[in-house]
Length: 223
Image (cartoon, rainbow, N blue to C red; front, top):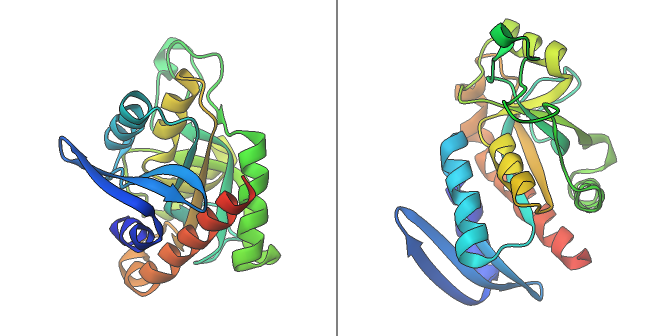
């Protein structure tokens, strides 16, 4: 989100903005680590383009991807945090050819697994920021759809055992996997994926951004 990037920029030392196409990348050091901070934009194509540019143009070696998500698991509430142990594209459907829902052509399984070390660091950081009872690890489901229907989110939860739904994470995961780069996706819950997002998100926008920034900085301190 813009608010995440804008609030992180003042923390970056030796900051430099680099424009590539319609993307702005912010380079420098953060907590002693060389970083590139950017906003992916909404959807899987934007996320894949951004991730590829980070690898090709900036030689990125690992990825921490943050933002918001809708809750798929009933135990989640707004401002809770979900750390991905794996991601799946819930809108991929090649079942007419005998494939599982979510399985991409050319892949052996439908889950893209996050890096265990980054998952551990993210979970520890999330527990520090929001408390142990509000930090979760699980599968995040991605699709080019804003899920706002109780039945649809239930179907996604039941098919993929997903804890949260969003629109970018699995695209980042697929690109990172294909380039053999470690990654983790961290999402703050903004709504119940049931049509209430238009009410919840404006009130929670700053809180979700604060979570993302605090967790990222806590992770960098431990890398």
